[in-house]
Length: 286
Image 1 (tube, rainbow, N blue to C red):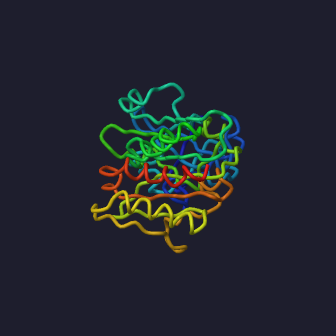
Image 2 (image 1 turned 120 degrees about the vertical axis):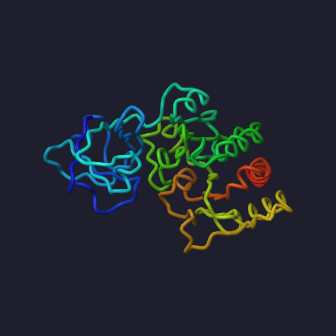
């Protein structure tokens, strides 16, 4: 769908990942409030956004964003002409081809019936590097039990894959991710999400109970002894507590999700040890 935004028509609220658009215009491309969309400014400038508001627009092809939202597209002046696409993930690219072409793909390992554990990494590739390897590792280690994994992987030549592809976990909508839609109503007993952040530690959060968080904390601490990386339990006031019911990891497991935020050092030097430690905790539970 073609869009147009003019000076003075930018959103005054929301994060840089959010946009607003006319509901009827969105419907013409099969999208609605809460869905993700791909906005393309030029052949090389495009990014993902979550539709957070759907006001009636006149004309109906106006899309609004904050200044920081438009900066994700390197938009330096207004008006700007762009297009909105409902295709969030590339449907056919291999990981290697997606990396070479600055693209975004979705991966699912699932036998269609397993309900014990799903390991996820919504921000793999170069978005939060190493996290997809961890989710896939957990599923591989526990393959005999049929454990599922769901990952998204994004790249951008020259850097800034995070700005192009990152969608906050509480915003992820299954209507925009075809493979996620296959498992969203499976009602897994457990779900674990691997993430990365800039702090120099590992933080265990999610909607699961404290006992499970403590088990995972202890297992990771044992696995990375001597690393100098602290492993902590997120407090309810932490911005990374991961306990929001809308967090995709909690939705997949009826609130029983674990979210693991990790420093770059942890994801680079100890990704496998951490993944194996997490797998060891769930091995006796599924």
